[in-house]
Image (cartoon, rainbow, N blue to C red; front, side, top):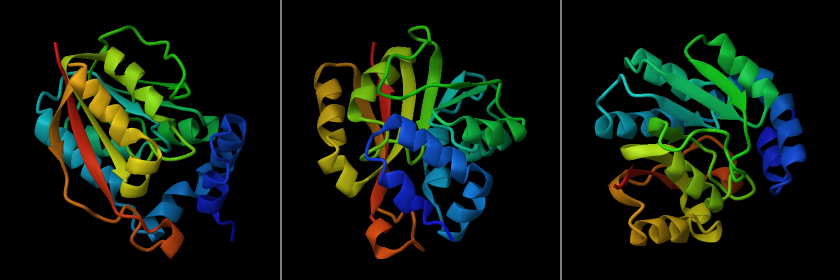
Length: 210
C-alpha cells in the first residue's frame, strides 16, 4: 500500500509534486484518512459553527480536498459554500458530493482571483502545515473576508512553530487585521497514524476586524 502521507509531505512545498501526489491519492483519500481517525474536519466545523451562526453567509473551503468539511457544513445548514484546491483530482471528488456552489483550482500562498471582502467565513482543514499552504497565505485569506468574518483552521503544534504560522497570526493581530475568537483544546488530528505523523494540534478561529 502506498504511504500517501509520506508522499505528500515529501513534496516539501513543490506545488507540481504536491498536486501530482494529491491527484494520485484522491480516489482513496477518504478511506485512508478515515482509517487514520482524521479529526480535523469535525473540529474545524464545530468551532466555525459556534462563531458563525449565520448559515446564509458565503463560505470558502480553502484547500477543500474531497469536500469533507463542505458536506459537514452543508448538513449543518450552511447554504453557500465554495471550494478551492490545487488538485484537480480532489476537486472532482468534492464536486461529486453536490454541496458546493462553485469549485475552482487555486494555490494558497499565491494571489487569489477572488474579490476583496467576498466571504463571511473561511474554513481550512489540514492545509496550513509545513510543505503545504504557507503562512503568507493568511494575507489573502484576510483580504477576501468581510469585516466581522470568521476564519477557522487547523494547525499542528510543530507546524505552528516551525512553519511560522504562529508568528504570522500574531503579526496580523498586532496590525489590527483580525483578532483571536477561539482556540480548541489540544487533540491528535491523526490518532491512528504512525508516530512520525501523530502530532498534537489545535483549531484556531480568527475574526476579521474593521
